[in-house]
Length: 445
Image (cartoon, rainbow, N blue to C red; front, side, top):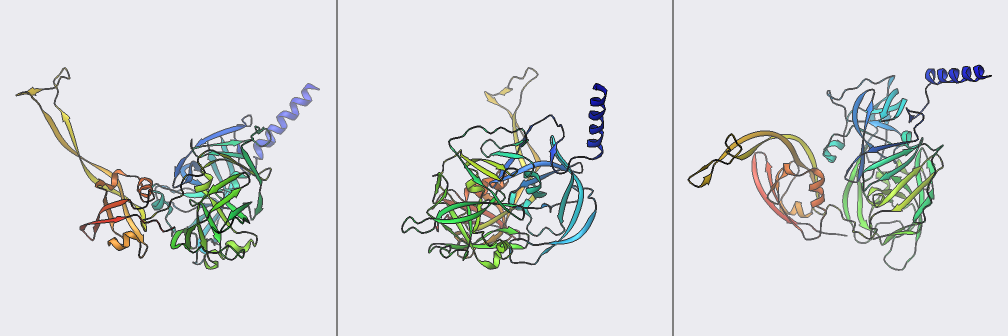
């Protein structure tokens, strides 16, 4: 009997080796949890992973059904398997983009792996997400990873926990709100309520895409319900870039969104017309998206196996929702060689300061280092920066008298969101000529 049991154990072990598990799973089958540390940039979760042995950086985006690779240079080149040509269509007004479909790729995140991942490779990276993030971003992934685990995202501590759904035991949480998820084309949707008008307290039921890959708070599709329309106070803005081009909308603010027991007051909200969202409107029940500017204020659980989504308040729901009030679209512009001065004190063999005539001697030396550079990709007409005279393709040299290379892109964008009336001084270079500009941030909604 014992020999028979041992035979079957060995047999099934061999079968598992010959026929590996489909989808993402723990490499060590005795493990029930894996923790991944991530970077939080512009509200987006950036995780390290490997594709066919090559280390890359991807955005974890619950709003995408496909794994997309779009920033591969010669230095990042990887071998892709079983390739064929396809076309991809997304938000934006442009035409579908040319892509490659590659099957049977191996993707690894620490102890998590998938040996048959399908990847779409965008041949021409039109929106250059790396320039907008300030670091190299190679792609985005969502459903194929999330569907196999219970995933907990802690935005404050910048950690993601992946749990085995077969062994996961949720803790009782009185301060949590759990929503049923409705999937459409592998994308998760929840029901919420929003107050759209400052007059009265009427709440409108809405169905929203959970979009961890959207850095804004809320997007609404105009006309999907009678009262979903741009408020009186708004301004036209570029909200982002989709696979099919720039996404335009009317940026505004609504009184509140109600997520069961949680009420988020005065969030920013952008209203998109049908021309920018024609492909997203194939799901007729959809009214918009809830993005990371709101999600980051909670502990978030994605429970795809049980079709549930859970929130636990972790930050202030009353903390202000700001936006870029300058009108500038600033992007990373590669590395520049910067001359730095190093000053050191002269010491003797005993590490004592050398004094001459009651003074301490110093040695000044110079070194050259590669530092980040930033440029203006675009300026909204009639914005504070536009009125001051800043234009597209200007190179930023200094911000408020501090060299631009001493900032991260996130630092710069944070300064442009700080407070209404804040004074911003910039030294820029335009076609080899240095120019100074000053403007004040202007809150329009």
